[in-house]
Every structure is written in C-alpha cells, then in structure tokens.
Picture (cartoon, rainbow, N blue to C red):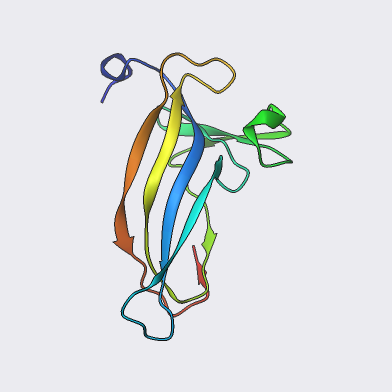
Length: 126
C-alpha cells in the first residue's frame, strides 16, 4: 500500500499485547502468559518505506521521551526473543501511531499478530 493510500509516510510502534502459550509437562491445556507494555524490549521502531529508524529507551518506557540511542536501518524491523523451549504458540496485537510518538499524524491503530506455533528444541529463538 502506498503512503498516499495509507494516509501517512511513517508510523511508530507504541505498545504491544502478546499471549504466549507454554506447554506444562505435556499437559493438554497450556498455560498462558500475557505480556503488555510500551515498545518491544525497549525499542520503538519508526517504520518507513524500505526501512526503519529504531529508537531505544534506557527505561524501556515511551514516557522517557525515547532517543537515548538511535539506529537507522534498511530492510525489515525484527527483534530476537528468548523462550524456555516449552513455548508452543504466540499471538497478540501491536499498536502503532501514524507519524511518530513525538509528532502523531492521526489516530493510533492496532495490527493483529495471528497465532502461530513455535517449533524449536532450542532454548533460544532468533
């Protein structure tokens, strides 16, 4: 979708709500961990055409006014996650602000992260 069709040139990640399902001793019903908060692991990427600018907060909160450090990158934004090796499913939603957190250009919107299984024998997922 073009920036004109979207109605904005950039958008910045503000918060996330994730459900992480863990298997418990081969139980049929996994336990669910709810994760809510500002940014994603202290990062607040500003998405733009063909890349992103990443802002980091020392305190991990958007209220810290961000920009303790900054990184400009081409390509897709992604981050690493660590699991206990018993995580079986991940789902949730991520909230973005058109424009930026410092200069919003419209109403916030959420993007649904469809549930997907995690298949790994490793303790770490990248």
